[in-house]
Image 1 (cartoon, protein in one colour):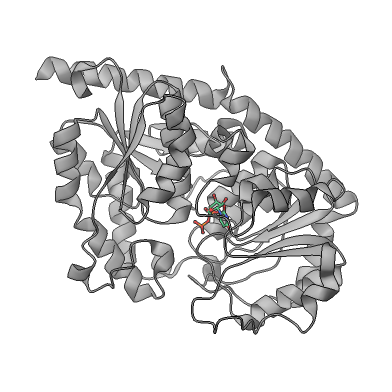
Image 2 (tube, helix red, strand yellow):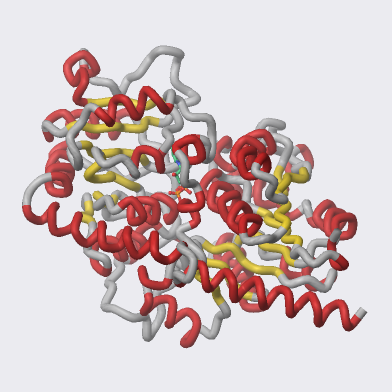
Length: 461
Ligand code: UDP
């Protein structure tokens, strides 16, 4: 295998967090379907989840597998079970976690030596991998969800308040240094693979390539490589609801009559905020599926946030999923007419791909940028009015605002208009990944480029 074989062998190294692993697994599947051998790098904790997600692709005879690396958690002072970002409970732990990941360099080098890949695709959060790839003479491609930049000459008049920026953008913190490193290593890398499609953001794609001079390939939406119900249901963690039960519930509803509420894999709300959401949803009179993350600190069976008698009152009108939802399966159902989202890039793109307008409720990271993009550039969403970037726990929003925003995105002329625009984008998304589409062609061009690189490298050695 490796350099002598005709087939390109690609390493995919995601950051250990669901929002980073899910699109990278899809990407590995996409590359293997296009003729590459894909090897995903994961911890033993994440390995079963990945194996489940790739099982069908593997059974179909495609060349895709997982190899493991062990996080030195003890060395950085973290407990043994902290091997994924969504299992950490404080910012201090996040810093330790990043430290542990940086200590994976030797394990990565050993894998490169043993398995001789032709290219390393690694997460934007793993800047140190650029140097390792260079040392072994292979290109590193950065896997990037979305670019948090506001800079001079940025297309569109997009105002941003200081409160909506991460603190590391406003003052020099440890993270500022890390993000600078990320940016620098991206410049030194072979290029960037984007989970997006050109038609969605032509001005920004051009700006990135021309003004910033970055080589980039737009190959998404990656979630579209999951075509069957089973593939969609098996994305990410184990669902907390049986897929058939979920679909049966949705099948009983009229088209565009259900709002779906989910804040991704990381964001957390306190009991008071969850209660506001509960009250707002009930007052809106709309049907809903609401995903509430399990609170690891809550007493078993005790749900402070749930108003008395709530579930018996809402009965068939609302479905609460406690834990993990099969999100793409839900968004793609015709009964779903709106999505209250924290604007994580995956969720945002999944909504675009499903043609579903959004209520935007950003919490942290680059989510405020994505909100602006959805509401002001694409005009397929209304904002709930969050003012402040708060890292992990959302700003507080009153039930009246929830009620109003849910109604605005689900019923009436404005909702119809947004839905029309969203559906048009969804069609473009599907067109982009079909043979001859922009993402399909961009990936083809990238693979050709990688083959040329390999040839040039082989001549040298
Ligand atoms: N997701 C899911 N079920 C859940 C919560 C999240 O399938 O209950 C998936 C969602 O479809 C998306 C990813 O997890 O692909 C979350 O990524 P995103 O970038 O939206 O947010 P993050 O979790 O990184 O904040």
